Amino acid sequence: MADRRLQVFHTVARLLSFTKAAEALHMTQPAVTFQVRQLEEYFNTRLFDRTHNRISLTEAGKQVFGYADKIFELYTEMENSVREMTGEVRGALSIGASTTIAEYMLPALLGDFKARYPEVTVHLKVSNTEGVVSMVENNAIDLGVVEAPVSNKNLVVEVCKQDQLVAIVPPTHELAGRETTHLTELLAYPFICREEGSGTREVINEYMNEIGGGKAHLNVSMELGSPEAVKGAVEAGMGVSVVSRATIQKELKLGSLVALRLDPPMKRPFSFVHQKQKFRMQVMEELLEFARGYCEVYEIPPLPQREVG
Image 1 (tube, rainbow, N blue to C red):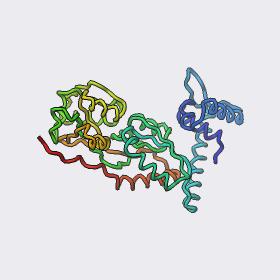
Image 2 (tube, rainbow, N blue to C red; image 1 turned 135 degrees about the vertical axis):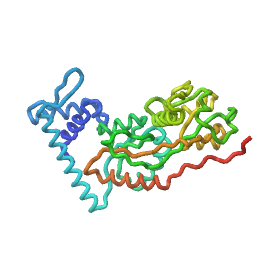
Image 3 (cartoon, rainbow, N blue to C red; image 1 turned 30 degrees about the horizontal axis):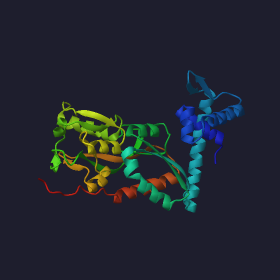
Image 4 (cartoon, rainbow, N blue to C red; image 1 turned 180 degrees about the vertical axis):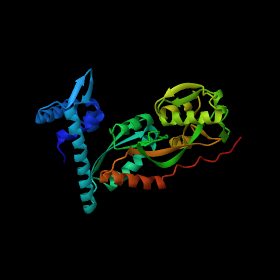
């Protein structure tokens, strides 16, 4: 509803990048540049200084950005008020999710949400936890769902569920007959792990520091970018790993992987992360409330009982 030129300018000013703004707005970069230039022509002054492939706000740009903030806050407050009166929920949301959550938890949640609110458009971006938190910090997405603790105290972090991590080995592995294992026992084997910046990698590192006093080190033989790649490498007998219990239900049923409980248990939070905004879109409120309810009923099946040889 707001002036499109002002919306585009506001996004560029927040992100201080025409490229990132184009991605966030689902526009081409030339289209973003055109909208900003039109606003500069309207005010007959430059709003950005462009030097050495970097941009910064001019004094006039800072003034426009400050007023734009107030304008969009009022628009949001107005829309929320009217939506509450009419009961209508519509609009667009950008969500970022870390890989494990995007692949194994969000599809069902977003499918049910879309069925209830067909007028809502949801854009999903997948990254590791570090990348998702960065997108929230830069206002590139409305909501992040991550799988590791968040240290930025300026963000709102709401824990959805506790996720359990387990060790996985191929059925022919010498540990396959065990029900439990200590993580230090895995040090003797090649370890397949996620890349730096992933929630799984961060939680494993913290766990190692706690139980090993900072002296224990995994024998990392491969770093891979997704749970599916990690599972495939373990199935192929290339090493052992630690993954979310939510990611291995199919493999356990097929018998292509064996899961071992860790002693002591390794857990991590699945959390919603967003900016501290006084007024949020009604569609954002509805999604958060829907997701909270989903978290209450969503259960990861327990590890199957098996005979121990």
